[in-house]
Length: 308
Image (cartoon, rainbow, N blue to C red; front, side, top):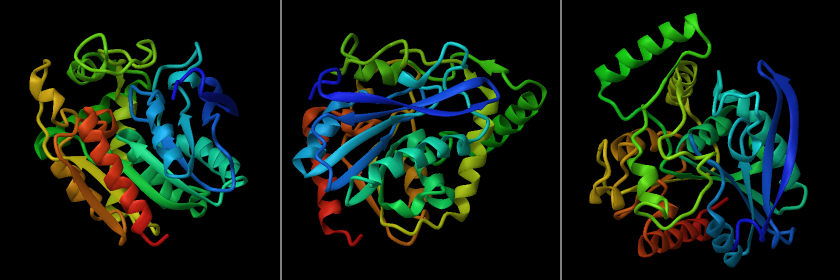
């Protein structure tokens, strides 16, 4: 499927926030038929929906496909806004609820799917979101359930983030994200995918300390997670931390630690399935073809055999 020709975008107007006008964008496949199961996909940090092949795969399995560009991300980013900024993960619940209501009105059932920070957001939503009862199942693609740091480094980082954020809402730091992951997937470097570098820059955006605090609080809340629907947690078979691109980036999760995903993921609810995908990159469905095909196979097997 082609991102420009085969998808349509709908602006979701939201009440103004502390920065002014706010919107999200709901992207829908032009091949949706209604009256069948649907997927709502939520992207990660420094990200937006560009994975057009997801819709193609879900259509083959008889699903309608939707994706949401959250406020201050991708298609939804407005000129006066700070990119990817939030003070609380709960800010995104509004557009997720709006999208779920709209999708459910023409669908038999809805499944929520989140990647990385989108996986964290989706997990929080399925605990506290207004329309969580509209969702039949949750699919998490390498969810950001903990910082990829030692306990000591994490404690120190969050302490200083809280301190700095308490003084300035927009205090920020550059260079937190290694460019290696984006380089490993973009076609102009070492990957096969094309995406808008204004919305998903190779070096990322500035990281706001307020955002770091919001993420830490969201992760803390998941210690009491009690998601009622079946949950699929997918992760790579290996992870590694690198600051510059090496060939290991092509078959490791170089963003998150898979042990963190396993440790927190298995406690998200009482109907959790953990699935390891050998040699996958951070966004499992952007892995080399053979790897992502195996991931699709395992995901659809779970969808076919789980009791929703």
